[in-house]
Image 1 (spheres, rainbow, N blue to C red):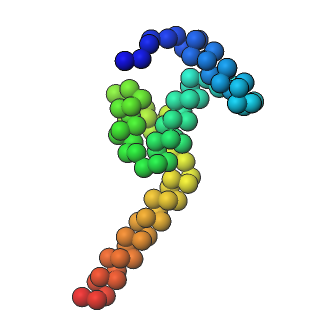
Image 2 (cartoon, rainbow, N blue to C red):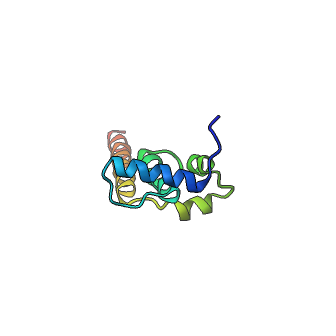
Image 3 (cartoon, one colour):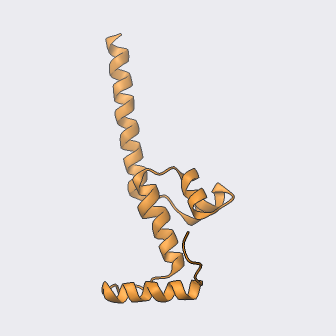
Length: 95
């Protein structure tokens, strides 16, 4: 589907993009994969099993190391759980 390009060429393209966007950080393919895994997928509710497949990992443990769950995601998940528990408790009290 996509052309097969080398890691070196991809890093070169990322450097061009960084220059155009005035990004000071040295962008690399590794950083792009990490950003995709954490900021784009996990932070937006994509299950880690799906992220693992998207990254081509055969074991979820690899993804767990590679794509650390960010603090905001944990906080958001706990807030959702808190709301669900409140609904359950309200239903029990009415019963």
